[in-house]
Length: 213
Image (cartoon, rainbow, N blue to C red; front, side):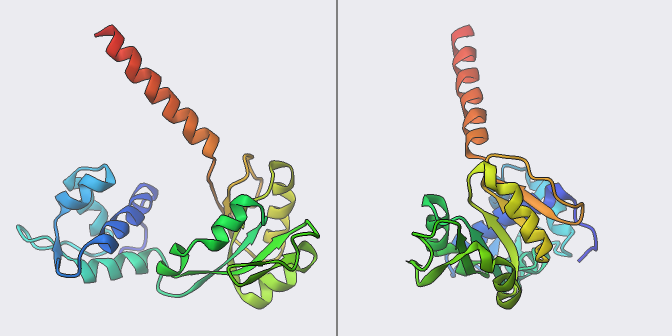
């Protein structure tokens, strides 16, 4: 595997991995065209992406699905269990804590926090909601590597600051706000309103094009 994988390639690797995970076990090979159809790329781009993993396939045959899945999982760092902490036990945080797909891809929810005393101590999928006062201690003892922020926007920055102080360097932010973090901390933002606005643009753009035609 090459040492440096371009960010655009990294963003497509989970898509390739999903395709491989959904394939019937009887399918031992997969072509770059099949991967391209799902990832929204062309087959040449797929072959280039996979070359960063040291996987070149067999001309006219394709890629060994088991080997390719292993290579992608290694590139994404999914070869070991990654512990996640969710901050915010509201509707979104609870839904995330109940999501069974985490385990399928090597993630486990090790801690769940909330500031609401009425929620503290309640169980969500067998995991007790913890008070925010225990965040630093539990992040350390549970070996949390990824923090998921599912709080209102006004609380997100303080939560991020505490996660960073506790040693967490990877954050998934569902709060509708931009976080300020040190350069070494990776933040991925999931903003549903932004995604809906982009879909709205394409929806109306398509209508305008149809009207013009």
